[in-house]
Length: 128
Image (cartoon, rainbow, N blue to C red; front, side, top):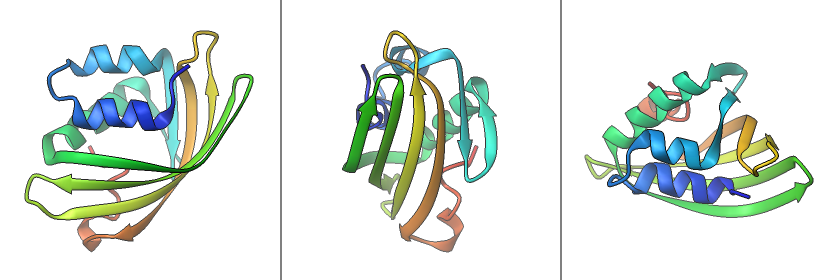
């Protein structure tokens, strides 16, 4: 089973591995995500992550709460993103997700709260 902290760390910090390979490692082919009320397909999620990889030099995920019950997954974390321009953004993220039979994310619903950062980065969690 994957965890969101592991998936995010791979996606945002492992620039040596192809994005498609990392997505296949942690996310079902039919993956979909809702962020602050807006649904994305896996392809749209991949666009979002590609954008983040382009502007991010490092990301640190601090898990605050995490619970798995069968295919149900809930988690709360803070992520501190250091952008290539050396500014930082910190967000707290509340997550409810479904895992497939292989332990990969099938769907994920999240609400994000910016804790620290520039106003222009408020929607970094859904930027493409």
